[in-house]
Image (cartoon, rainbow, N blue to C red; front, side):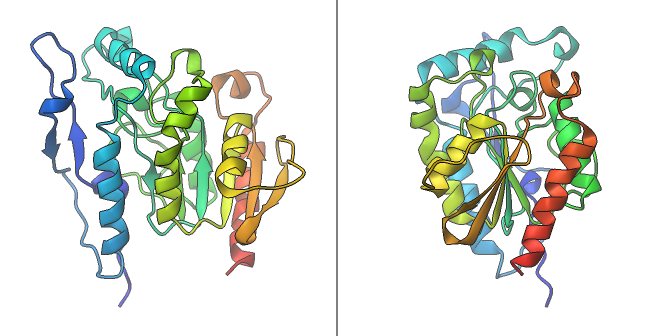
Length: 270
């Protein structure tokens, strides 16, 4: 029997319930079931259930006061273009195929992207670039990602970030990075990762920290490649931020090249 994998956008998630003042109230989070569901096979169910358990705990995390204050401030004040939308305003779980061998590692959710939509790299230009490339290289079923429940599904690919809350100026503090590290450790423990594409130097360093050590430490660069323990491979890629894509530092061809290289490595590993 062919196993049917359950997409992470079909998993139950916690939605923020507003208080009278409009602030998300973690004590009154409610469970909502998405519109589209898929049957899980017996083989897939254990991993999916474990991911659900991790994500249920993650979205209630309030361990970093500065990040909690910022993500909720952004969710209250909103950007003018999204003033009629209800922001997620919570930690943002990873997203993708629970049986993935490819891990795409970013930095943190964007204030008006993942922090608004509740899904990593969803609802902003960075996500347009990333999911467009994943679609062209066969890891995603569609090239766009606008909201949870939009039908996006990943194949053999899982996307997450070392920091789960949107940080001010996209710059988490070292203590926030360290406080958030156990969540990434939990995710990695549930995945059979063979190849990691690190989007930027921050992600490169965190991949080495969690999946290393590698000595001497390899330097980050676009198209940099490093062997990790346990037969894994780390690939460096410029981040899909507008600072890189608008200036031409990162082109679609360069981005696609990294995911084609990841596919080559996965085929070589069987």
